[in-house]
Length: 146
Image 1 (cartoon, rainbow, N blue to C red):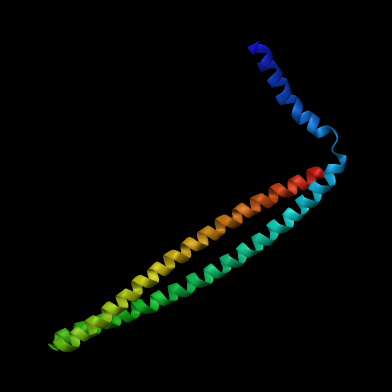
Image 2: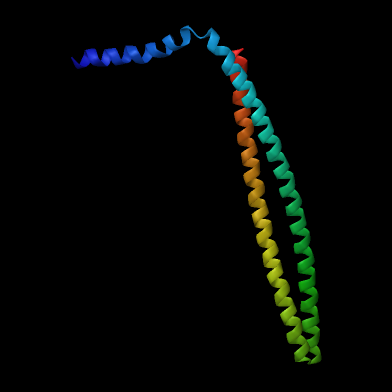
């Protein structure tokens, strides 16, 4: 009894895909159109991801420039603080130290921004790669259906 059930299940499993393919000439036109539309949709998404990547690169370059400027300002404040200590002017040294610490906070913020921009850039690149792969698959589906 169990062998007949298993045999029937196996035959059915192999027969269903064959029966599904037999009478499909009318159904082929719709998937071709949908596959072509899907390729267009994928292309649009890829273009959007490319725009996002360009924007991320611009943000990254801007943040790197800001980081360089903040580091220079921090170094200037450090030299001024050292000079004030050398002269014995402790009030001026404390003032420069406060400025330097504020610049250090800006440096840390810029580093965080750069890290976020790198993460966004990586995410957008991976998303674009995924979209390209999907478009490639949809193109092959459309070509096979024609």
